[in-house]
Length: 303
Image 1 (spheres, rainbow, N blue to C red):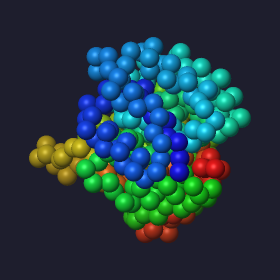
Image 2 (image 1 turned 120 degrees about the horizontal axis):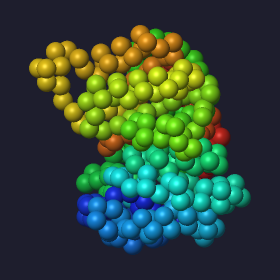
Image 3 (image 1 turned 180 degrees about the vertical axis):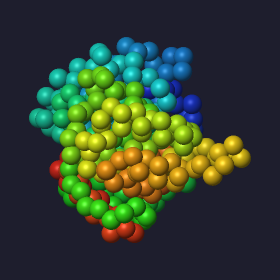
Image 4 (image 1 turned 135 degrees about the vertical axis):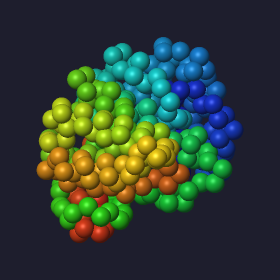
């Protein structure tokens, strides 16, 4: 079983009951859960002061060697405040000496992309303590794909997509779209050529998603990729004003502007059901026009 170290660099965990449930489930499964004080720590809307949260991130450079997984408690906002003070060099040295599994999504994407940009560290975009492990009912698909990514040096996820058939191979990267956009022009956004970009978000209307994707397009980032995969984008509903403009229409409009294939339908992101993907790993994408297969390798796994 694993030693799981909690980290809370963003928002205060407002759903304390869910976090406690997540800890209890992990412990009942035989895992040890360290740094539980991160769950209850609070300053304003954040999971502690900036200095407290920064110290917790920088502690990644000196965690006990028996630590297996670093798991984010939740997202929210706050990671962006820390980026310029994170000791990426020291953390990178520690992760090269002993790779650890670091997992989270949402606001945590900022730190994950910073680690990839600054020291080439591969981290996992996947479930978090409160929202996933602490859900009233844990999604078995999510759990199965999480532990598959944790344990298998090569694994494959499949889903249905009606995009044109394509094949691509390259660095898998991305995460939360809004956080990725916030890093454009900064040293914490990786420069990936020939990659497979996978993005997701929540509570963003399709026109806002389109605007963010167009910003990546105008910045030349999308043209450098071999494929773009759209995960889950939930939390909004169409109105009469949209008059037929929805997510699928947005995707078709984007595809018309790009030479890079755009696939959708991957269960990835702010959903009860989500895959876990290692950002910075090598991926091969095969899509026959109906079924997409993404095979991933080169990521750290549990010992």
